[in-house]
Image (cartoon, rainbow, N blue to C red; front, top):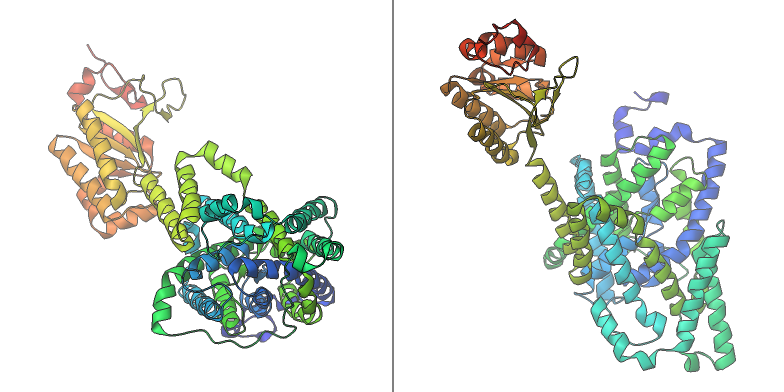
Length: 592
């Protein structure tokens, strides 16, 4: 039972009951203000992101209404705000523009279907408790994809910024060629609006931090367009086109296309969009939770995101996920509970009813200028520089994802980046370090070190395995042990420090039993020290501990060396040994 006698099963189905105790008069006041601020900010963002997605502008606003409310109520984060985002929008555009004309009715229908598919996959993954899967999308994949997506955003807006004709869905290299061919046709009026919008946005971001810079930039760009039209004879002369008035209405009910052919066609894009949307949402939720002292339930976030997209597909919303900008603003504005996101979605409905007709004055060039700023802000130069300086493998993952984003369909770029990052991970884990260890003669406790200049025991090799023993690592470990044997065949005894072996599977266990049999055949033995409980359970369950010899598995290194030196090594060889590297060797007869 929960507090106030609410059954656990009820809390499981209605997770918002978990934070009901946080709601009071003070929190409501803070959440109302944060929600109102969020609704104002999402207004220009929603229009901008819908433009990126190839959707009619109002659909970006619809995606910030019902989906935001559902995600807040059924997720686990106190501060995450869901809705349209740049990444989700660019994935949607890339996936659907090859099948339908952006902005067309067929395109919108496919977007609704994709949203329903993404939501369904997210919900099923949450129910199946697969919340840890997003951890397999590395940071380098996200950075590379986002940087590539930023360039695509900018190039997709080039026609609006320069006032020239470029076919929708053109690749970035096609846009470059079009700009070269149509250089003389660039419209100076349109460029002026776009450029001054960017300048206004940059200045507002620098000097008016308390005011959303997008709103300042849009208002300034609109004013510039009105002035130019008034001075030079109107739109017919200047060529400054506008977005057009948005419908001042509630999100209309919609129906996704559930035909089998459409579902098959969109399946790869749905899977890729799901992975990226969940990564974005959970990463943002965890980031804010660490600052707020909250624990995030990844599986519940999956469920919340899934339900929000399922609901959004029937209320004219396209793929929604956690927004970093709006979630961060929500936190900074003092939000206390998920009610802030609920208020933001609710207030947005009211704001749209009042403001939508004014979009008739919003120039496309101003929107392009804002999206140029958004694109520039998406490129994380700091982390790109760090990755390049730190890791060659991660640099390869980043570069591959980046260039794949530019030259391939985005869903395949994401999948390729994930596969490559998994390959890098598997390559690392399949090559655990296996290195020799010897006692340090200058250490009072004779602690073991790796130093090729120090003497080794002529009869026993001591090695440390730094990594798990699973099927992918067996070949490398076996090869390393065989190499030691080739270099020093007289060392028929082997002491393996297994303190860093966190996991072992059947293949790893069989490797140890094979080594034990081989060394016994050479009149020696295999000895394990520092074996973790989880590894012991596997060795015991499969009978491998008996094949190795339970008497050869030690908890402490000192006990293992004492047993081996006094009872397992050949005393005749010890009597003539001049190395005497162990403390236990002192009690042995001195060599003549």
